Amino acid sequence: TLITNDTSRLQSSYEYIVVGGGTTALAVANRLSVKHTVLVVERGSDQMNNDFVNDPFTIFGTPSACSFTMDAPPQVGSNGTRLIPLTHGGCLGGGSSINAMMGSRPTFAGMEAVEALGNPGWGWNDFLPFMQKSETFHPPNAEQRADGADYIAAVHGFDGPVGVSFATPFVAPALQAAGVNTSEIIYGLSLSPDLGIGFSGGHIAHYYYHIHFNEMLQADRRSSSAWSYLYPQSQQRSGLTVLTDHVVDVVSTKAGSNGNITATGICVQPSAGGPSLSFNVKREVVVSAGALYSPSILQRSGIGNATFLKSLGIKPVLDLPGVGSNFQDQVLLANVSFPLSPSANTTNVTAGDKILLGIVVAHATATNAFGPNGTEIIQAALLNSSADFTLSVGGIVVEEAFSAQAAAMANAYRIDHPIIELLYNPGSEVLQAWSLSILPLSRGTVRINTTDPTADPVVNTHFLTVDVDMQIAIRMARGLAQAALTPPFSDLLTPDALAQSNVPGPDATDDQVRDWVLATYTPGTHFVGSNSMMPKALGSVVSPELLVYGTTNIRVADASILPLSVCPHTTLGLYGVAEKAAHMILQTAGDT
Ligand SMILES: Cc1cc2nc3c(=O)[nH]c(=O)nc-3n(C[C@H](O)[C@H](O)[C@H](O)COP(=O)(O)OP(=O)(O)OC[C@H]3O[C@@H](n4cnc5c(N)ncnc54)[C@H](O)[C@@H]3O)c2cc1C
Image (cartoon, rainbow, N blue to C red; front, side, top):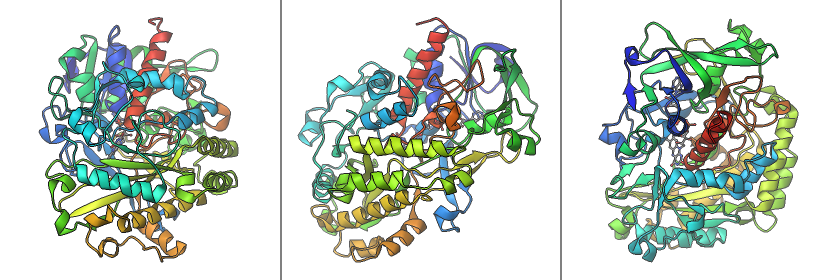
């Protein structure tokens, strides 16, 4: 594999061009380049030898050469005042080179909802084999099993590129045990044998991570898509060229006789500035720049809302109003730290210097979180939600997109999709409990405001603008307070830990909790949906084959295609998307 930032080493034409060198992109490129020439173009740099990026125990959130943040402007869902930071990965590996490596998957109920939105072939049973193809799962060893880890072999893969394993040794067994027991009490849940079984029903689980812990494979290294699909000796491809430090400006197209358009290549420029240059494509262009950037590339290429594009001086080649709409993310209550009791200051609780996030997690269903009628309460709230605000801001482009998604979500909750994730983090001075909403209904937009390819798009998140999302966020905050007051987790904290944390106590009114949520929440950083896969009549962008509607050979393969936020954490699901995308592309090429 040739990885370079020097364009003089490149050919002028490739069979496939992959736009972006991130999580999904490198997996797609790996599979296509077994038999075909492939060019990957990544805006960021190659950080292969950067130990800070590779080390899975680097303190999460520390800025790195791969970590970038843009701000969403203040809006209703942020009290009209706060900027909302949108952090993303910007080197080879993309988000997988900076993320917290928590290895969850979408659920059975979630993938059924995706399929029900007009996407045959995307239900759990069809999708699972693609997730399995991507992974080498490392079963827990005797020591980890003794501490509570378990797995179900039938749902895993054992010879894919991505290393997935429990931490070795278990990070902080005493905290994990406390987190399990407290979550059992708060949500009435029990320990699952494996969090990747598409679980129906809420559960508690010990997290596994996308980390190569295995000495034979790669010891203690982040299993980013770069370290899984690109760098290892076993993954070298003579047909694969990766151009770094170059930003893709547009996909060049020509019109066909039947009204469809066909990609002929791409136009790129050095990320640091300089003259543009073009590459031709013989077969397909795969846009994989992530949910924040893929819509921008389509928009610059003249694919999007024609009126909007004209307002920026861009000649529309395809009027596809859904490009950049249906953007969504979960809401994370993460500014929550509880002071550690001095008596609990042991590495069994604090994890010493090997801190990983979310070492134990509870996935609560609506019934677990809202009581015996929880599912009916949330279903009614979803089905009675008004589309007016979301339609007015462009979060959806046709009203039916909102009702169809609300109905698919309501059905997922009927099956028993989780609604809240509660997770516990170790630490030497404080312990953290965080809470993540999983399946929001609020929808935002990603739109360029300039044709400069190096500029960030404007992302209007519109988080928490649909009331059901706020109801869930309030329940999330209540769960955090309960955790701080419920033994055995509370036994690890100082007696005044809840007051010190600023989390509203049990006596706070819903209005007080709402205010705290609006002042405190951050994005889950699992951005999806901005080029959604749904029927075109719902104002969507790609078909179930991931082809951009109205094109013969432009596919999108990244988090932007997910119409719903069905993954508690996205990465392992996105490797499934990548494997499925590559399979469909190779089918079109007649290779499978
Ligand atoms: C801080 C953080 C923590 C997270 N923690 C977890 C976790 O614990 N577990 C989990 O499963 N998920 C986690 N995620 C989410 C997960 O990492 C992302 O959802 C996933 O990486 C997105 O993959 P993608 O392929 O859609 O896009 P990305 O991986 O973002 O790849 C897009 C790539 O395209 C490049 N690009 C963009 N525009 C252009 C252009 N014009 N030209 C060329 N290149 C371009 C970008 O530089 C980037 O490398 C986290 C994310 C963040 C940001």
